[in-house]
Image 1 (cartoon, helix red, strand yellow):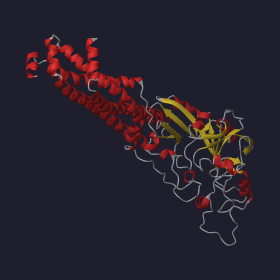
Image 2 (cartoon, helix red, strand yellow):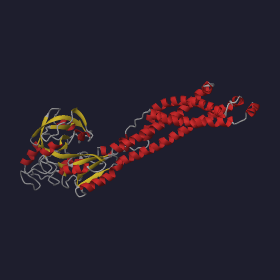
Image 3 (cartoon, one colour):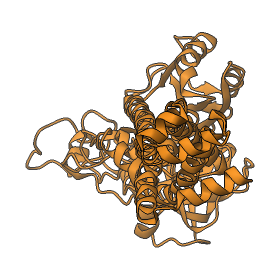
Image 4 (spheres, helix red, strand yellow):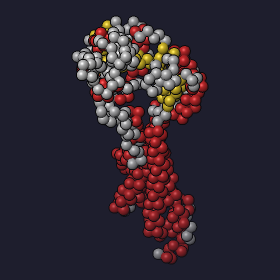
Length: 483
């Protein structure tokens, strides 16, 4: 106890100097701990991104991605085959159809045909059961077709003859998506703003989720009714998908959609979840092989996700280097301080050796004295790191990521029947690396403190022991003579 008590007392022999040393060590140790915490938080974010973002593979019928049809519809049997592929954690099928407004359809059917169509036949793309639609609904589209939509659904001429009849009115079809579970809709990044999600997925279900834009256009609220084909549907909930065009749609139970559209067992696409982004490429190949390259189009991947992970890897390297450098700085500070302290107390060391103190005892005394200062610096540094780690981590990430990318396409264009004019929408699939990463959350746990503390104490011990042992090797008579 004599060595320990003497070491603690010596640490505060010069209170002003000791306080300054503690502050300097606190800054270095706090920075080291902050960098260690940032490194761990970024590593956790990388693991999270790999397991939750960019690990989705989409399976469509072959040739269908152009929006004009292609291969045969997907089936429930193919969905089971996809679920059996290695590294696939889940596979969910949806059936997406387009519904034309009932009144517009009737008007189109009763009108005079143009462009070579027979009188009484519904014009393709005019809201009736022709091109682009699979059925009818009492809902009125919340999106106006605009000039592009009207032109794409005209009779093919650039003008109207003076005596020609006006073409039937055109209404953009409403997208109806049949989902197998409530989680399927939730996976489409929608936010339930009223009511609740679907919970009846039977073929006879009358539940529906309605987009906010469509609900406002048709004065719908939770509990309101409308028709799809000949079935009366009840609004179970309202959703917001963050985009006026995406909100011009409805979600229905999958089995009910298949029944209403007479497409039993058919699916428009699969959404396949892979256990990690590292396995996406091999799983994509395996799915193509299992389902047949001539039957399906398998797409996956996001260059922005790869950019995000690459940026986070750079941040990890920077934080690791900064952690090591901060530890080295703390060790250098201890070394320089202890060299000064040992030189000031050479006479004390000579006296201790003269009365029989061993080199080990002298070395332990100075090491413990340094440890007292380092422990105090670590406590203060941990407080500093608690407040500084999150800003430091996010500053490093912001400096190594790029901003989002705006999708190049006319508003309403992806549906093929939209119509406004400008290039106005930023789509989630095109979100930049910074949007994918978001905010880095940091926390200092006991494991971090233990790991950082061990590193700091080890360097501090070396920094204190070296000057103490070098001085302890001097013969007492030489030390005392020099004094």
